[in-house]
Image 1 (tube, one colour):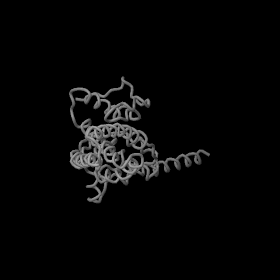
Image 2 (cartoon, helix red, strand yellow; image 1 turned 90 degrees about the vertical axis):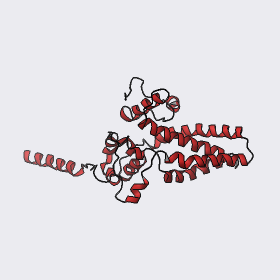
Image 3 (tube, helix red, strand yellow; image 1 turned 135 degrees about the horizontal axis):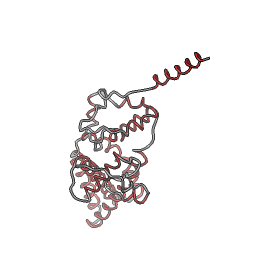
Image 4 (tube, helix red, strand yellow; image 1 turned 90 degrees about the horizontal axis):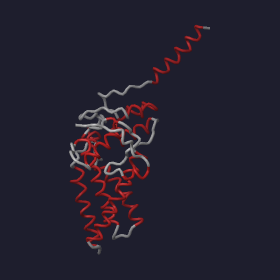
Length: 252
């Protein structure tokens, strides 16, 4: 009887060993993390604080497409924003009207920023492909929060996402207001990505930037299911996801 019991226990141990998976940080990570299964969420929220990021893919072209310097975002997208505003002006709108539409677009972006961060970027995953997709979208940022080349969104990905967002704005707006409204949203995105980079790598000495940095680092290192706003804590306050004021991160 005891022999049978020991044999049964040993069988369970063998199954545990077979199903364990250890990520090898010296090898490309993207197609490894899916094997973590239900343990992925725990693994990805244990950050590695290093300015050197991991390799994602064996293929050099695919690897290159995941790397983006922060200044690429404003260099590419601000001229597009300017062109969109000019387009609405040329279609008969005054500068004042375009400014108001742009401000509305920026405001709507802050809600999009919050919604994506809370409900997509922090979705719970445990299957191979859902873990892999989550790691590419946002998990990599929580695992390696100081990786400066993967902090802003790659322009190719932004360009692809612009298509459905443009169509959504065009559905609700007129042909002459669509460019300005969309341009405001795109400007909000640029502000978001640049702010996000600065909160990780800048050293603000005064508010509101100092407060935003502390607020965002709380999200990374203390309470990761609160504090989803990057450029503002407005929507966290409205939807009840403000972190406790007693939980703070100190930085130099």
